[in-house]
Length: 358
Image 1 (cartoon, helix red, strand yellow):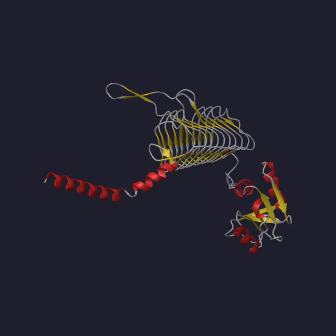
Image 2 (cartoon, helix red, strand yellow):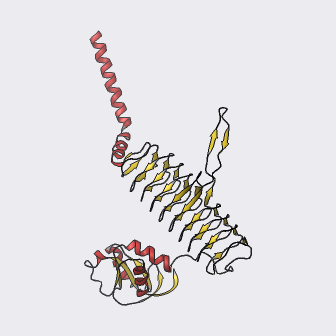
């Protein structure tokens, strides 16, 4: 992205602020853009996890390249300025967040747009931004650098932490809590009433009011069109550092512990609990009142119908260890051959039986 004006030392400062060890080899050059290896040029910064990418960066005479420690002993490119780190992708994320991220509110709008509807009880910090047609209800708490974009609705008594960005069209239900540095993308609904009903002897449903709330802790990312229901009595909670892809659903009373990752269209039924660092691939389904232990990975549309006792990688419905799943898939692909062989054996046995009777 063109238009930045940095020195390599600025990048080192950012990484060091985030407790990422980084060192500079070469000149403290100026950087005008941050580019992928395919489009890097003379005045740009790029990233090279492998030797072949570093060779491309050197050939294009980039201003600087971020490389992992292991490339230092393998390269003789002394003319190339390098920023050396342990994890190139983490460095990429932190640098781009600081210098190459999209601005949440375009400068064409006033800091607080005149079309926004804001209750008189709301105090707007000087660093906060409110977009066109946003609605903010009574006794909402906005922190420094909060951004509420166009057409978002923040209902009464919501608390929002510093640096959090609410994208267009989001709805944050009453009494919910959103932490600091949270990103909630367009169309997400946080704090809708959970799906709680009682059924009588005639088969009719009777709604059970859901009076709890949703708590989103710091540094959570919630994708577009996600829905997270409020709890029946207490709270639905998403702990610090979780990332949730688009179109996921968390039902009432669900708890995600720290650093979980859900891929698109994952659905988790009520009162289920994920441990720390659980990962669920696309279209994972989890039944209610299920517990998933720390560091578990759910893949291939896993359908979790009972609690999992031991951490590991699981697939299919009901979940089975991934190594066993692969063996079963290999057998499944040969079922037609096995069936034909079985039919031949049955015919042979039938013929032997006929011969003996004769």
